[in-house]
Image 1 (cartoon, rainbow, N blue to C red):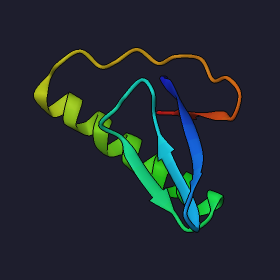
Image 2 (image 1 turned 30 degrees about the horizontal axis):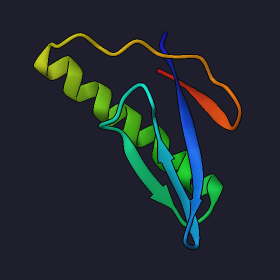
Image 3 (image 1 turned 90 degrees about the vertical axis):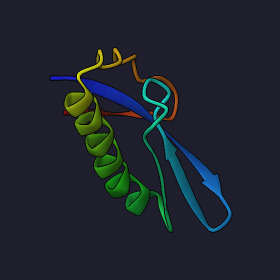
Length: 72
């Protein structure tokens, strides 16, 4: 199982979720909880593209600070 740390950054009236180890996965939500829900979908979609194209899946870094790990 892989765990990718997510970074949730306040922006405007909501939060942007990014994954430093997988730049293709980025999303946002109107609140932090919503951004977390969308982040799970974003990382799953990015991983499915890697599986379809067969490149090496990026290694997952460690969660630090306000990053939260998502396991897939």
